[in-house]
Image 1: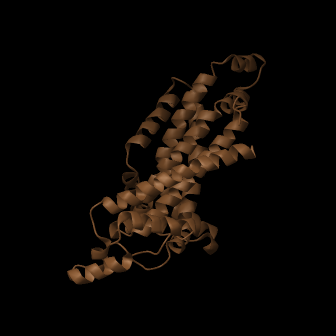
Image 2 (image 1 turned 45 degrees about the horizontal axis):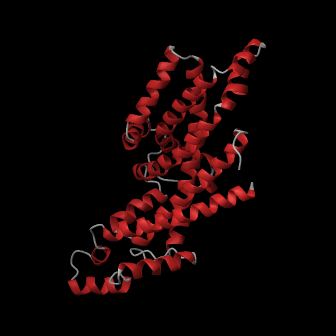
Length: 313
């Protein structure tokens, strides 16, 4: 097992290098000058040139890249162009709200989607199945920001039962922490619920036609034992796979959701950095997201070996 994990970790290194190269080139080759943004509209060309020189933006791209990579290998993500503070410190400060939102979204989506998909497969062809599939289509079709504004209008502006924006650390109390995550979590989890529910339904429909499921029913096992004890366990591999794939949707959704609900997380930090052309912050956040995505997929691959005995490492 350790050898398998080590091979996957080493295989992730070239991927991270390619991600770093692509991020660097995309940011440098897109239109816009961070020096002009820092200097302001009233700055003279000489002032803008001085800022570019101070930031090292006049150096050739190759020199800028290797300078950044050298610092990165030492654990230095650089200094924010806009705020002049270490990027690592900014990411650490904004990490908690994003982690809280991502965790509650994943847990809520799994707790809702897996039973919905199981129920749809069990009642295949019934109105319950059609209702679950309709909800899944709506979840895929409606943009995250539209769902967020609808919840804000209903629960915050009309009913006034939940706060509309902001974040409270769990140190300030569990309920103040949770109530500010309810609307963002429901908003972000809708597309995730749709994805997991559809895959759960499809996987279970295939498994329910297998001989061992019919044998279990012939032995007199109840439907709950057949569904959760036999069918769902053997259908878990594609479900776990789609949960890992959904992390990419979760990362992109965090950016929009945090902007809608004004959560001071990494998504909001990314938006602010893009608008300000703050290269070091954008690079640091995207590298972090890429590393998390690779780590999640590594965990998923390791889980495969426990869920499917046919897989060897």
